[in-house]
Length: 80
Image (cartoon, rainbow, N blue to C red; front, side, top):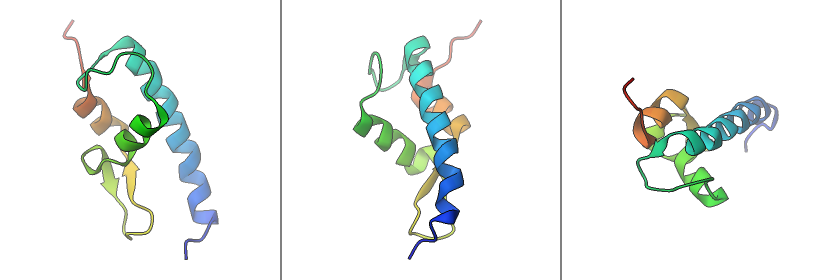
């Protein structure tokens, strides 16, 4: 069973990352071709993708999203 006190602090971080990703979605070109805001299931898939995160030490929690990997894997970054 998961200790709920261990899950609360990452939830705030993940919420902040989701808000930032939605903002980037409106400013940058998404490699997936999605234009505009992501739908909830699209956001969940993006945040829980193993290529976009750091695996947890146990299998119960899953992947911890890594914003640097998400930006590199999901967005076209313009060269200025």
